[in-house]
Image (cartoon, rainbow, N blue to C red; front, side, top):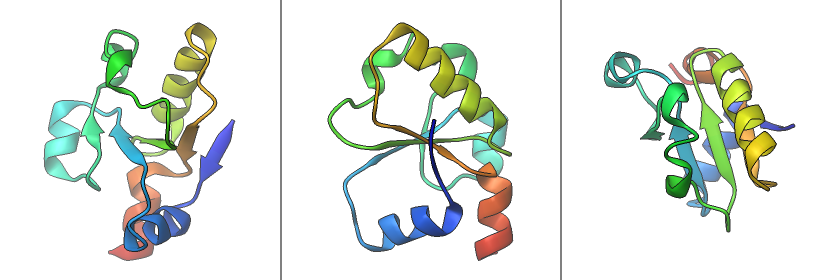
Length: 99
């Protein structure tokens, strides 16, 4: 499974690179704190697969990196995605680095 660190993600954001950012947490978690990702809760990820880009990197995150890993596994089992990246440590790692 492809992965990315919070520092690497911040560099992509700062460099205005073209990628998609998806948050697989629940609404209330996203509303409390997010790093700009499109909200697609884990339990909806398969139903909303058409919202996920296939032509550029897609970075998926949650609070600690576990739900995002599950999301990637589920997507890759059913669809031929090769462009998905898990944010290691999720928003907790982001907060630790940048807040």
